[in-house]
Image (cartoon, rainbow, N blue to C red; front, side, top):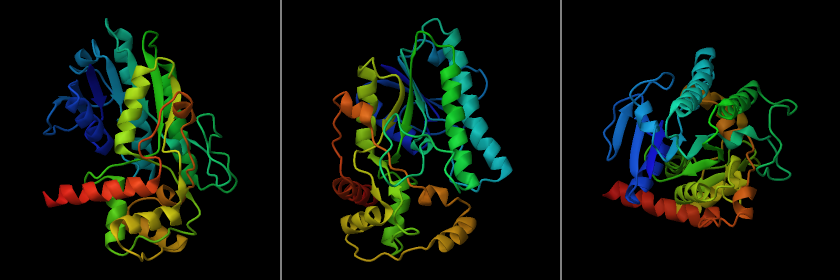
Length: 317
């Protein structure tokens, strides 16, 4: 296949591009910045036409992961950049597909499991309760959900009648790559700071990087998979248990906890938001499971051990 990955310079894009190229597919990454990679990189600005549209015409698959990182303070300017980078890139890809003489068969569009409600009682499956209306929800949480809904709306509005559109409501993809979420969490553990966050009751949804790629292949191979699809391991668990499991996998028994107040202060200094830590994301992938997909890493314990091992190998090379 010819696979075009927009916004493919980040962690998830790199994981995906590496896997598809390893399997013999032609990979083209669209990036705002010139990067050195084992695959071809085409320049784009994420909002207007350029030479990159020629790669969309005739591609088998386009995967759009473009969007400004949410790991920042939600200032008015950052909010604008977060929203516009997602909506604009989705719209311009839709326009490129609409004018293509040979449009891609499948459009995989990044979304997020953050779109679901903050809850503890039961998991959100692919038809779960969308968030935004929870009582006392912080403004930052409402903003993130508004972004997710606008992202998917731009996908749904795109004129692409001959292209199957899939919104990937993915949980955090865990890979050993530098700068990814697993690398950040393991750094906390390694420095003795990997205790529970807040009261530790909030659920963490996650997916092993190899299962993420396997899920993409599964979706590509099953033509009935269209619309919103959750990609999350079947066993999310509370933050306290999640971090304790990661500590055991690394061989450290104790991790200092952080109260909610400590997290709020720390988030200011680290220029990020506590939503990334404190919102309860309890999400499962019913559509994948019902279609016969089986996760190779359904439990966090096994996934954490594998990721710790691979992380050590990469750092010792």
